[in-house]
Structure formats: structure tokens, C-alpha cells
Length: 314
Ligand code: AN0
Ligand code: CP
Image (cartoon, rainbow, N blue to C red; front, side, top):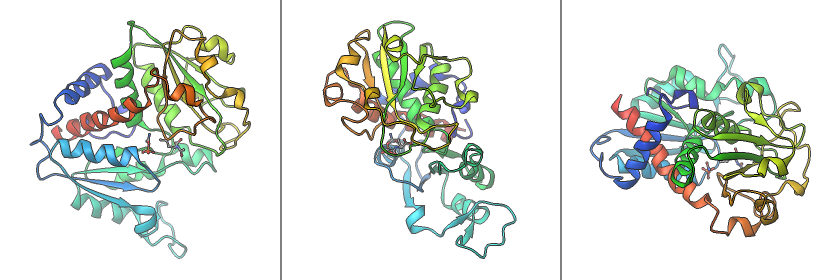
């Protein structure tokens, strides 16, 4: 593995998940692998889990870690080629990425979608510029259109909790007052497509995900039908793709409730967090023993660790 910015960087999901589960049993088994190596984490946006779990993962491998909130503490970066930089940005990614590469053995970046222009967001300019100009491997900590470390943690969690060989996994849209990126949903769909599961997506009309992501995955507009026999319910809000970045409805009928969970095959509930209680999902579901959200967050450590391990070995 030379970078991890998308699900397509995974060559064998089953072996990656297995290796992560092994690391979870013996987190310090490779504590010399990252000795005298440095991970630099760059955050353009807020984070709790990603920021802490990735540092924890790096320390398990013996790495040093440097963390920077680039938006607040760094120079405003320019990503366009050939610009006359007489406006707000002070430093070009060409220099920044090369400079950071001298301080880092691996660079990890969080840069959310702007949700203003679909073509721009889906071109992944920020993370792709880091890949282009950095001279060390780059990891996505959630980019404009994907959150591959979250998706890997989710695949690990499903593997640990599945009761049959091909569980039914349902990704359900849920309401949220603010427009959110499609990144988590996109990467979840992509990783489930290469996992041995039956994946169904359910959402209100108008919330169709990008067709290059959905491909031939089943979309069931009837949520009750989608929930039937589900083994895992994965809730996530995302803003509209066609009417790009818009909140089209705040219908709390799409909130995941205890009542709706009764339609399933005693499904486990999943969400990447942070979650708005009683907007996305009812307290009763989140507080039930069928909720896996805390374990998903725990598995963020081992998802990051297996990826860092692969990059260090390369
Ligand atoms: C972000 C999102 O939906 O992409 C981060 C999730 C990990 N969520 C919020 O901003 C609430
Ligand atoms: N799930 C997730 O990525 O959480 P943070 O935004 O807190 O890192």
C-alpha cells in the first residue's frame, strides 16, 4: 500500500480486516516498526475520534506524532495551479506539501467538502494535491468525498458482530439540521460493495448518492421494506447530491427509532459519530445493547493502525 485515500487503495479487504483484528489482540506487536518515524496529522476541520484514534494507532507502532490544525494555525493554502496569489492565500500546496514531507514519514489530512460546487468537491483537489506534491505516503482522515478509515473501522466492526456469512446491511439516510458531506456514506457503500454482505441503501427521493458510487447497489425507497430482515442498520445523514449540498427535508419520520428497529432481524445499530440524539436516532436505540457506535469508534484505532503498518512496511 502506497497511500490510503480511497477504498480503491485496498487490495484485499478480508486480509486487511483480519490483520486489524490481530492488531487489536496485540496492539504493541509491531512497536518497533515505526520507531524514529513521524506521522504528521493535518486538520482543516474539527475531529474527536480521528484525531485521537490515529495518534493512538501510531503510538502502538512506536511512531512519533505531530498534529496541526492547519485552518487556524497554518498559512492559508493555495491549491490552484498558476494563480496570481495576491488574494487571501499565503502559501502554495507545492511548497507546503514538500516542506511537510521533510518532517514526516507519513502525512494524514482531514479536509471536508465545501458543499458549494459538486465538480470541485468530487475532483478531490485538496487530498489529491497532497498526494501529488508530497514525497511521502498520504492518508485521508476524511476528504471531500470519502472517509476510508471510518469505512474500514465499520467493516471490522461488522466482521466482529456478524452472525451469518452474508449479513444484510442497510445504509439509511437520517435527518440533520445542517448540510453534511456524503463522504461517510460514499466510503461505507464502497467498502460494503467489496465485502461479503447484502447491501441495501434507503433514503428519501432527492437524496440519491452519486451514481458512480452506488453502481448496481440496491436502492429501496420504502424504508420499512429495507429494514425487513436487516442484520445491521447504519444511519447517516448526507446533503443532496443533485441539488448539491442542500438540505431538502428535515422530516423526523426518517429518524431511526426503537419502533423501526423492530422491523429488522434484531439488527445492530451503527453510526460513525458524532451523532445528534433524537434527531438522527432515538436515545432508546443509541442506549440499547444493540448499538455498536462505541465499538466502531474503538475500531478506528485498529483501522488506522493496519493502514499505517502497511504504509510503513512499504
Ligand atoms: C461529518 C460528516 O458528516 O462528514 C464528520 C463525520 C465523521 N459530520 C459532521 O460534521 C457532524
Ligand atoms: N467518525 C469520525 O470521524 O469522528 P471525528 O469527526 O470526531 O473524527
